[in-house]
Length: 181
Length: 132
Image (tube, rainbow over all chains, first blue to last red):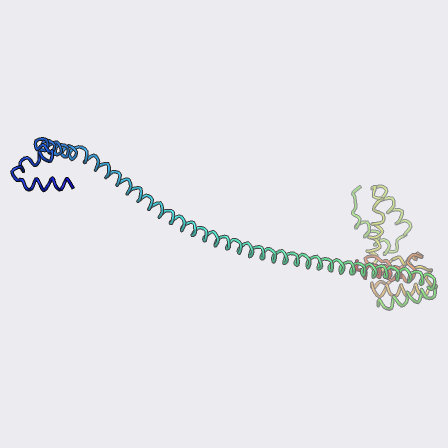
């Protein structure tokens, strides 16, 4: 309140405006000096500090942008890698399915071939056995035939020895000669 | 002394026999020649050749083998058969009894043999019809 009163008093006494700055406690020479000092400071700051600072800021910005870009790229790469991994997994699953399918098919074929071989071998064994049996029967028949023949010859010889007398022998000789004619 | 062939000897002997020469003397000559020429091993072959040439000349000699002794009738039948077969005018047969022939007759003349014995028939039965 006393400050307002002070201003009102000052306005009411214009003759005293030249010493307003003095009244405010401001020394105009000091003020000019301070202004000059400020301008020098501004100049110095603008000449030496601000460029370096701006340069640092720019560099920092560039670094941040690069980092952001790298992060984006890394993110993109990660996404790409994820996609690739997904793709590879899908491919691997497909290949695995193919391999399993092929293995199953091959196993089935091998099983079929084994069965075929086993059946063929069994048939061959059976055929061989039949042939052997047949051969044995034929041999037995032949041996029986020959033995029968031998027995007939022996029996005939014995019978003729006992039954063929001189008269019958003569008749046999004459008959043989007649047949030969 | 020149060495005569077996055929020449046989032909000579056949001619002598056919011309009615003394058989005993001829046999002695033949024996002497074979001994002298050291060819006694050929005696059976010479005899066979002589029999062959004699059969060609119409005089057949042979061997008859039977199980029992031949009757005169049977022997005549055999001689007749040989004459018919060979065209010989005379047939001289030597008879042999061999029980192993069982029955029938076996006639051997030069160049031929007739085997109508039971033993041969049985042998044929054993061999010809054998399968093994």
